[in-house]
Length: 451
Image (cartoon, rainbow, N blue to C red; front, top):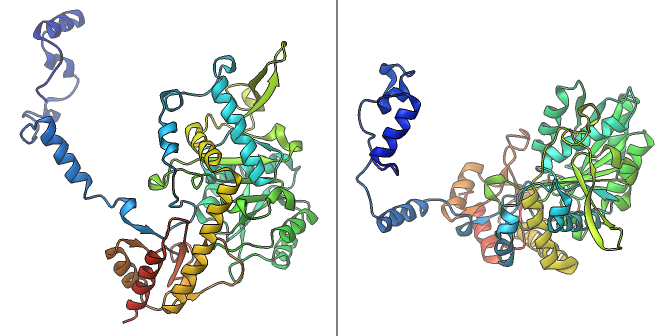
């Protein structure tokens, strides 16, 4: 570009300081054959207003989520975000703040972090939560490492139901493979894991299991018999790790009350934009007996010598703060701004508001299933479900997809990639944002694809 903020005198002074004669001397190490010997092929310059119009025209070509009815979920959900949330989250003291290494200078950050932990504990029914993690998948992987560290040899294997999110299973496997641990998958029947099937899988390999991962609800949207599954896991000396949807927990019995040892999950649904899949944040909670093995940081509340309330980093079990050999994890930071967004969201809604969001999602999902069944689709798996379900399409999947997308509908997640046997099936998610008109439009596309 021809524009430069430096005058000719400025450039000459800098060259003299460097002991060079021309600007080209700065690039002497680059062979002449690799240098561009012409001006960049750029269009004619535009005024600021012309450039603004050009950028708006380009942006208008994007498939903006606000113009689509999104029935895709699988961990990232199209939920209503209160206007107050982005307004508060974009304030400078939040947006530009970094890790609270100095508690005496970061009381505001530590206070909301403490409140975040408290809210997550209320949802999960657990006893201790850390100050968030990168995302749900890496939180699950950290939980696997934590579970392994809590067990004694030879318990060196993790068992995961195939109804746990495929990307969570892949991430946990990647984390553990380099450390010599194994992850095995138990195949479920009818889209849900039963205590009897789990017992059979656990007894195949004796006492090698360190932990078993369950989903609540599972990837297919079904609410499994979590209490029975956890009791079966404990009967075989393993730990129960539950991957939970935080919005569903506004309606479901908290996993902690059902005996879970660790509860993790993805927090995007708590007021954060989909943002092409991230960033979100992960949450990780545990029993108090396991607190010394938790990764990341934990904020705590205390009083000073004069009895004034204050907040501190109670636990910092990571390699920046303690000897590397004693660190429980090499996780170096967290998605604090995203966790703050969830804290604002939960504060704005309150317990009753979050419950109403969950109830609206539940009602919409059951209505959508009814309309799709009337259009010829068939529900694949029985059992209670929250906001997601699997349907087999009556017509070709690609034709159904194309018809829906042309009407600005994203009809669901095709399952054939991760579950080849489900080649004509969609995982449909219905949040509180979806309207009856949108559901009917999706049902029409499904019906028309048969012809």
